[in-house]
Length: 154
Image 1 (cartoon, rainbow, N blue to C red):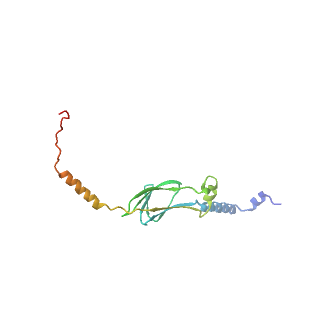
Image 2: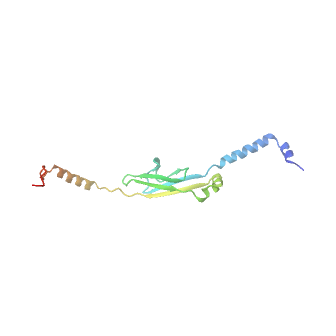
Image 3: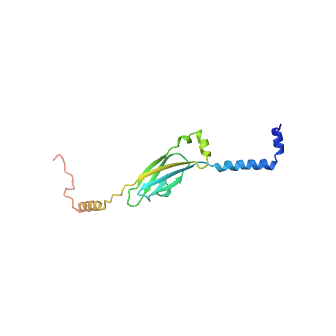
């Protein structure tokens, strides 16, 4: 009967080192799960910021590392700028315990998709000009009330 000592003695040291190196390299290839946030807008092409960091024009995807609430800012010419938020909640398998297995699975991914509808900008330039002209005309008219104060006892 062969013992562990016999197997160890018969296996060349170089072969054992190669096996350990292969195991370590394989463990390094498993990596972490890829987590992405994809932001889309209607209409597309809006400039997108997450937590005050510009990430590009929609549709755009970016990797994230921490779950939680993200500040989202969107801007597109001809549309009202939007400041809102997006929530990246962890999936059930990414809670403490199961996450150790999930993070080690090659090619695993978590994708969060946020969609926003932009509102067209209100072009009220003609109304603003009319109001400015009215205020200017009122400011240029002489005062019709007396400038002095009357004694209420008279």
